Image 1 (cartoon, rainbow, N blue to C red):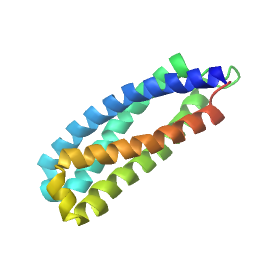
Image 2: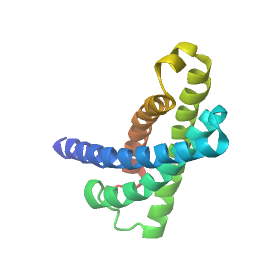
Image 3: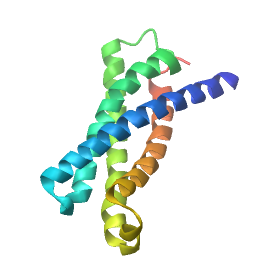
Image 4: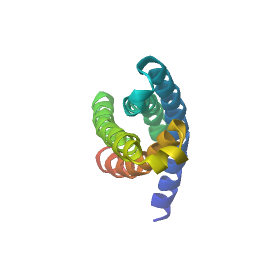
Length: 150
């Protein structure tokens, strides 16, 4: 039980690091997309930013996860390992993008009081935090099941 708890803590630390990478790259990407597409395309721009941030953070997460969190399966080919990690991450990206889009589009877009309360950046941040929490649980469970030797 202690080993699992240690693993969850390490996974959480890696997750926090990758969240900040994801968030900063995503915020920059969203703001660039907003300038290109215009403010009326906030949900599209936030989805683009979210996808960019997530992609960069997946690479960092792969490296850090196997360096600090999970024990590699010795009999698993590294190419196969990366492909499985990538497939699981793409599913996570879909979950992430859906939650960010849902929060910044239908939810934020249809609630005037929320628009008055939250800026675009804050709405994106709230959606991103919710998405990150959901995807973090998904990532831990699936990576432990499919990729970890322990």
